[in-house]
Image (cartoon, rainbow, N blue to C red; front, side, top):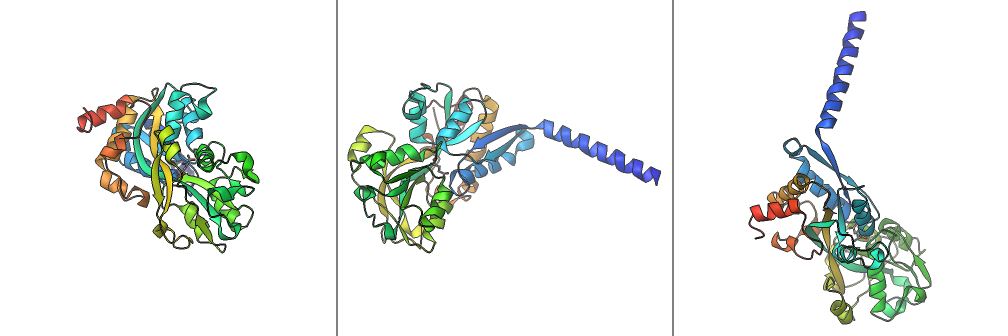
Length: 323
Ligand code: GLU
């Protein structure tokens, strides 16, 4: 009996030691994403999956964190709390030049680009009973314009500006996470919510599949906005992705790109590994989310403002994607 107990203890102790040696073998790198029903969260998961196949070779293990979104991710990377983050291309631009949310903090000179990913469109979902058909109908309505820390918030304000409205013209301004937006529209507690997001995604699926019928609102008066901000482009929301929605044709709006960003302080080896594994396993990566359907490697080097991180650059040169 004593012998058995001794053997058990020895085994437990050695397993614990082996376990901690195992843990110490890897450097953990965390990717900041967004809400779990958006596209950032599964995108972080897809990137981590590619990298973790080779965790032994690189000695790194990628993990994913659900966050408030673009602005939170950039700030957390700059503070050294996250190694990577997904952020809208417009937010990367503003952070690099010290604009919008970074007006006070100034230029984020350590921000670095890795690659751009899927397109995201400024999406306004409203309930059928709200009577909102176009931008100017938003006057006096209960609208969520994106959670603090999200990239969405500034896009909502820009969208309102296309019909001369500001946040002050809304009846109630909510700052909900996307998952809450879908829920609250179904509870009739809001008339609509904005979400800058890739399609298809879980949040919009949830809101379009409920009891209360919803529709997308088009933004067509975007010429001035597109002239003023180089990061905006015309976009369309594919209605075929959402069978329950009331629109019968794709809805015109404007959009940005999701990008993977990091800091100049993150080591070349780590960024090289992440870049290489996504690009070398591209077909497998693309299958991980329907929002990547039209992704092309060359386009993933476009739409970025902050300089390329040297680890990413090393891979792009090696692969002949950059000179
Ligand atoms: N673009 C959104 C934001 O930064 C997040 C989208 C997502 O989670 O897919 O606010």
